[in-house]
Amino acid sequence: MWVLDIIDMNTYKVIMLTNLLYNDSPLDWQLHFQDAASPVMEEIHFLHDHIMFIAPAICISIFWIISKSVVGRYKFKNWTEGTVIEIVWTIIPAVILLFIAFPSLKLLYLMDETMEPAITIKAVGHQWYWSYEYSDYDISDLEFDSYMVPVSDLEHGDNRLLEVDNCLVLPIQSHVRIMVTAADVIHSFAVPSLGIKTDAIPGRLNQSDIFLKRPGLFYGQCSEICGSNHSFMPIAIRGVSLETFINWIESKISEE
Ligand SMILES: [Cu+2]
Figure 1 (cartoon, rainbow, N blue to C red):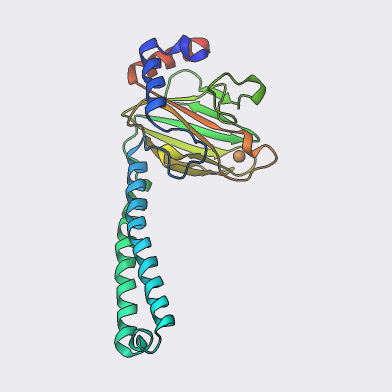
Figure 2 (figure 1 turned 90 degrees about the vertical axis):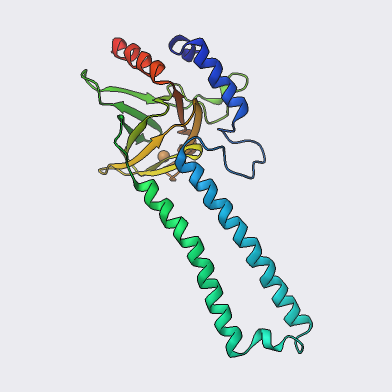
């Protein structure tokens, strides 16, 4: 495997271990999110849990009021009409909405923020593969294509329709700015465990911030119906230590 040539054995072991400990790719019958690997995704988890605490409480109390007023409609007359109850059922939902809106807006602005990036990567969507450009280095742009591994070439333990021949390698614990665009039609760069989903639009550069908290192999897919092979252009991001990243960049540059 190509990873073994470039990434030292210890990092490889850490990656294999985190793949067992963390859920960074879809599982059969999965109901919840993949594990967070970035602060933004952690915040998304918090917001989801916060809303999931409020939503069932609303459902249960509304169901209780409706069933009570249907079954004993004479006894519960003041639950269904009257000035007081109308004021109550207007004010309470408004307050609940505020409790949802504030954390939601806070998260929206947090996701929009681009911290001083250590490196900048460009991801370009094509029909039907991704190409990545590392343009921070003196040499002519370091650039490569990333194609899906066809099902017939998968090895035991690989994820179907998610493995790629060249993954995007990023350093952990560093702010990475990712510029997303497309060469032909609209694509979307989405990686669930990093909490990013950025549209790739021809002629436009959209930017997003990635901060990997831990090493691992994170999978994503194009999330905009972009043509017949839309389901066959996965994204794989390998988070490695800064040292390993520098070694990888050096080996890539010497290849050029
Ligand atoms: Cu696409």
